[in-house]
Length: 270
Ligand SMILES: Nc1ncnc2c1ncn2[C@@H]1O[C@H](COP(=O)(O)OP(=O)(O)OP(=O)(O)O)[C@@H](O)[C@H]1O
Image (tube, rainbow, N blue to C red):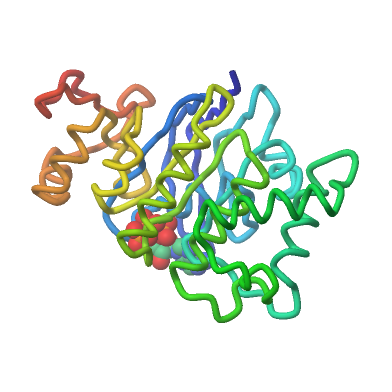
């Protein structure tokens, strides 16, 4: 089993503090849902774990099986088994998608993958994801539709086989059929050597890929952790009730998220 452990993480962008003390432990074999109102720091958390230099870690730690992730470069994090499926995948004109995928795969292995094996695996995954095979011969994400970009992120995940996938609104832009295909692809990855954090605003993704843990992030802090009952309540009532619980964090102990019982009541108050 592998563990990604985040403790008291504070992250700023241009000197504005966005994350204000995140504690989150993800083990392989677990699927964590991360929800929260717009602009409260969910993508910031995933980008900081992946090492985007725009996001400055000012306090706290991230460890992967005892290795200090904050001391690693982005490609070292990727080689160590962390993968980010981006909310807004970048278009890279001039870089052919299949060349990019092969280079990424080779960077993760001691010996380069043979062209035959790579093409076989690429073709299989493209077929599984019901992608247009011409996409692999086009420049990376250039002119791809929103849904094609998201499937391309999942294609990368399937080829790289990370220990931990951080999927940022992977469901946005997907039509109902594509959402089922992508969900199946995530479910196929499930194993004792794969863990996942999925950010989404919508219950549907979590119906198709049921999470083992659910967290709500408000104003840079994980304020509630629980199970499916949190998703159901957010779907019915939005976030107002979460904000009305009122959160102030003055001590380390208070910073621990509240855990809700199955009926949605607090079982461990701050
Ligand atoms: N590159 C950036 N430059 C400046 N501000 C940023 C940048 N990235 C994020 N922010 C700001 O940080 C805050 C948190 O943004 P973030 O994208 O993490 O929120 P989120 O919870 O993922 O929101 P959403 O649900 O809308 O995707 C927002 O106020 C956002 O404007």
